[in-house]
Amino acid sequence: MIVAMQEKATEEQIDAVIDAMTEAGVGVHRTTGATQTILAGVGPTATVDLSKFELLPGVEHVHRISSPYKLAGRGFRPEGTVIEFRNGVKLGGEQILAMAGPCSIENKAQIFETAARVKAAGGTFLRGGAFKPRSSPYAFQGLGIPGLELMREAADAHGLLVVSEVMEIAQIEPMLQLVDLFQVGARNMQNFNLLRELGQVDKPVLLKRGIAATIEELLLSSEYILSGGNYNVALCERGIRTYETATRNTMDISAIPVVKKLSHLPIVADPSHGTGRRDMVAPMAKASVAAGADAIIVEVHPNADKAASDAAQTLYLDQFDKLMAELRVIAAAVGRTL
Ligand code: PEP
Ligand code: MN
Image (tube, rainbow, N blue to C red; front, side, top):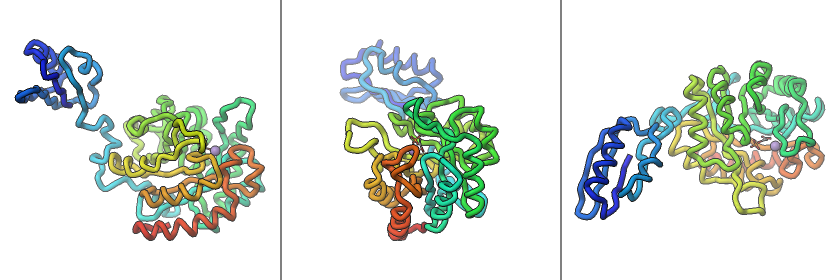
């Protein structure tokens, strides 16, 4: 950490800050410049609350130079994490993966037709919510475990893997045999009890960025899972709430290279929730692949206009075919396959 003192800071104020840093277990290196004194702190600064130093008399500003997320930080695994699934599928490697399916699992015909088309288009994961976090308690809440059983059957019939959202700790156990990847939704990114529990599970986790979360908060949330011993975590940019109203959320494409720089965890892009509009999904999916995403996750449905949830952002199956063909060209341009 670095503490820059104000130009007019007194020796007493500087000493008080040095004492406070020492008390926090931080070793202090003092540099007295012509106009300003700088105090560099080394040691266990990752866990020190910097805001209390900002309030001390004579302090101009304080900033952290070491990462507060030890296990999620790029330095922990500079070569990057590759998550291995069955069928030889790898997330975070040279191949970019496509995950697609309906927002919600609705019935057998819907999920089987979707699975066939996702596979034919080159997808590797079938997505679909069985437990749905809906803004309104009166909206369709999902089919629960029976829905997930249908999706597992459909995925197995077509050689696909399954990703589905877990909303609470009690759902982990019944979902464990039915999914290949647990999704933690945006609304649960800071459900720390759920994250801790997923840290104990031997199954990869896809952690979505919260609706109003910073990238640092996303990385700190991943730390809850990693610190429990589950290192198979992928992050997901799915759009954030901004003042813009033209799209449902603002798809933060820049989060992709930022996460790649700060962390070794694979990053997945969700342009469906990122934009909320069917006509914007393909452009943002393409931008995400160009920006370095390791996978895309998109909502598709055999009868997209009638989808039980998120219909407006759900692609027609033909649109998904076209998108996959376009993404292959972009993947090749950035030295990857799809
Ligand atoms: C979803 O994937 O359908 C979903 C609810 O996503 P998010 O948590 O990003 O809103
Ligand atoms: Mn959805």
